[in-house]
Length: 412
Image (cartoon, rainbow, N blue to C red):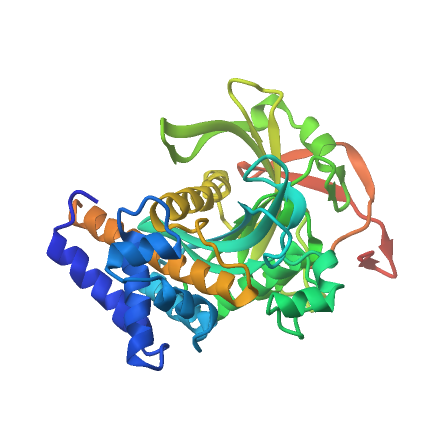
């Protein structure tokens, strides 16, 4: 950020605020929105409405609280503008969409969606809200581009509680995976250029999510648990356990705070699935494993779907890009007050979170400018060869003896 001149910063922020300004129907609302975003970007100790109001020169926080709780404007429309902005500033053809959730620690029982539940952010069960997010990453930068508040069954089953928190009547229970699929579909329909999707094992193990991506022709590298079944082969950890030593290759999956993140990787293509009309596949399915150099017993597992001709190094890069969303969470919380809200109702959560994401996207665009200036059918288990790992044409793949019925492979 130190390479950005103040007038460039101001011009970029003005572009962002003008871009979303038409979503706020009255002049006073536009002023409140501008004040709120400026406050989120300012050196405020804790970015709640009282301290933001003091920073932007308001006598009371009433105007900013009205913006979040009562005023008429759609955070989903602002999100759509945000996605268009990120596409223009950070977009590139091989962009990656990343899915993950984060926890927001809360006291009491009235904040929408709050209950004692596991928070990966805290690493334990806490009284918290859980938000499922999508981030977009490219070589130019990364930014949060969508969000959904997870509502546990204990909330959806209590309509009086939902009414008090202003949760819409048409909001039914949705798993985190369901929320992720909805965000992916929105992102694919947006101007964001997306070639890949990645996520941790909580989302990667969902076959419906993988099938949706395959039907859309979008590549993925998705973490899965070690017990994940691989069609025609068995548990993924047992499959990887059969990999010969020469199947492991050393690749960096991107730079971290201490330089390149280097691991050993083993990858093999699954048997190709051909359409019954004879069309050749455009993508390959893979199994992939990442092994720590310092602690070889630590192995992470992935399923991948990639265009024909994709190299293992590229799969490793996509797998490593998942850390970008963690960096987004950290930056958005530390610099833009993503987790410092005091709203309790459902609409207020979406409004604050969306404006904090907008502020974070602005910082990502400014950073990108400074950087530039510096210059699915699945087969049932089948009879295997003694070792399914076979090398062909310079890459590893699995050879499976399929059972057939009526001349066609058995599928499910």
